[in-house]
Image 1 (cartoon, helix red, strand yellow):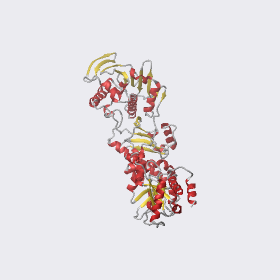
Image 2 (tube, helix red, strand yellow):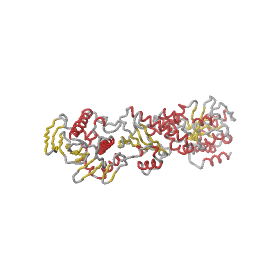
Image 3 (tube, helix red, strand yellow):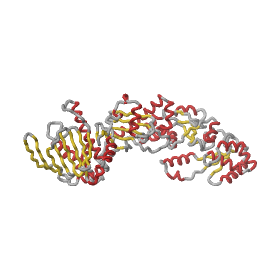
Length: 614
């Protein structure tokens, strides 16, 4: 540090003027700061206003400890813009600084931090920046938009006011100032390439974005722009449902009401507060526009929360505030940090506990919401084993008759009827109750139950369940004839001879054409005359590749259908007797209709007509 100083004592008032150079080796630090430090220039305002908030909170703290006896007065931070003068001013009534403190904090600590940062990262494209707290770099973001920055400040201690001026080269000047009130004004002389920030509305948007919940009032354009005590900073016992809903509306105006919420509040082993809301999702993996917002001490940081919040909860809405999340210079995340992992685990646990409590305390209410929350629960179970262990008690399965069961309850319901000859439990399901209705009805007449698993996450969920549940498999209700889906080891006698089977097979092959493999089997007479099936494994791969997460070639393989001709059905016996290829075609159409592969008269009507025609 080189300075030339001449300090004069005149009339007991300290007049001083000092010029200096911040550092000898780097002349070009500001262009680097401008270019690399932050991809987003607007955050200069976040940094400078955050500094003003810190200075104000410190004076409040000193006053409360009895270390500052002066009047606190109105502590509002003011942001103003003067288009004529081309300046933006941020004024606080916080601690203020003495000339020596300016030299120490602005010239030495913050600047050497900036310097060290640049030296260290200039070859690496900088995104992997260092931690902001370590460098106190926030102040220098001012040079992203200003060609000259002035600080005018008066300390709360008995010291003369001081002015610091720097034009973005490495030279600065410090001199006496005539400020009489405690606090700091930072005056930015806006550079030609940043004139957008001289527009009221532009500054307003930036303040709205980063400063909506700052803990000290911030005034811009004659009005206070922030709510200083947002509800996540309050004690949950002091809040009503109304408060939570109102806050949700502040965050996401015009959204449907959330289903419920979780108030996070932990101070060990890390600090974290916040409120997470479960929005209405309606079964779609719709990517939510409203994201969770991350704050650090009420300063908005980002809505990219991917490492802090477990993947399956990324569709939640709300706010998380933690000073313990490490932010790099551009305040994008450091992923590998242990705190982030702990926070992630904590959020998972809190969500599981909340769901469990809702399930236990109000099952009817929980069932009512299940079509919305099932997606989170299933996604969580698929992606996170710790969550699975808790959720297996409160995940619900819905029967085709709309009734809900826990895994335990459903096991109890199906144990007596749906075990196969190897004593394994088979759970039948439908992916589209409308299209697969004929199969569902057949299963129900047999005394079997059918589950509705119609969501995009369900193919993955089924796979996870089969991995986790003992001796239990899931089969889609139309994947085979019932006797094969739940193979009890009972053989049904065929009323047809082998020759009759062969001629039926070739008759149906002729009518069906390519893309179908035809098989004549003796099924019980309560099955459909022609059962159209798809291989369970291939179809599941297909379903999963639609949603992503499966090799694409499964998706592109043509699906072949098996036509099982029920050799014991009266309608088939009639085809055999009359070799009626027209009736054969109707029966195949019926099978196609029952899979939704053909549209036509309503299915039940069609079945009645065809089968009654026998």
